[in-house]
Length: 203
Image 1: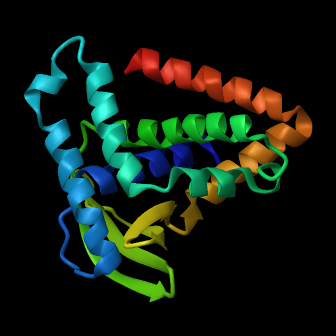
Image 2: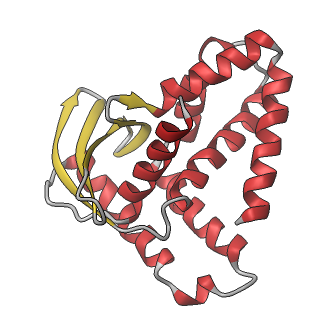
């Protein structure tokens, strides 16, 4: 993915989570509402914008994301065939590192505004797709953003986000596979650890 499309992907994903205004109602769609509302409340809390509270703010957003996303499912799908040969300890660390990429994408759109229209949903047994359309307030550009979800007991959890037909899981997965094939799994983890450290330092 080139630099422009990478920026667009993170940006649109961020806006879709931060500034949702639901219009369509349905079981999976309704699962998104409280999470979106809570994230907005966190981002609008002036107390959490104070100096020295970045970590607290980040943790508050992560707590909401943990209830919205199935981190283990999305991480295992992104790692693909390499997931099967990982130890339990390696899997736990990879899930944590991969979750940080989502968190960074959310915070990337914090100072931007937009509108989200919920346009429909489709359900196939325990899988669902919630379709949305994001409108940028500055340009008026409209971008389709779909959330792929799985039902776990009585909850619907997101495992992938698709922007203009581009899957987050597939995109990261291809990059992860290339790094592992050209170097090693250990090198991928090293890079992800480094990326996480930089993101935390800059937030």
